[in-house]
Image: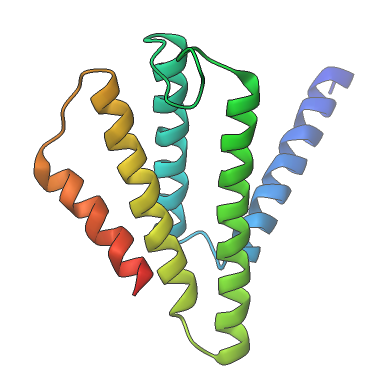
Length: 143
């Protein structure tokens, strides 16, 4: 095996190990965490599209892409995952499964509403049922 292939395999192994460790720390790679990650990714991509393509981002003064606003958004996503991590550890400490799921539901709803907002900015309306579903998830996470 050549040097480049060995380095690539080592990098893939490291990435897979890191991903597995993060998933485990957040309570496991179940459908709730998968959904949260998907919604966070779509929110990020739709926000970047608003800024780069349509130049209508509400996160910058001129609507264009700003790396500072992007970094702040990624830090918020990291903070949300930190809340899920803390909630999962509280569930473990108190032998429940409520707090992690509530945190995930809240953030799925919150980021889902952000997606709805972003898609509205770029001119793609969504069915009201989708908007109501994200709002219901957010409210359920608050309860």
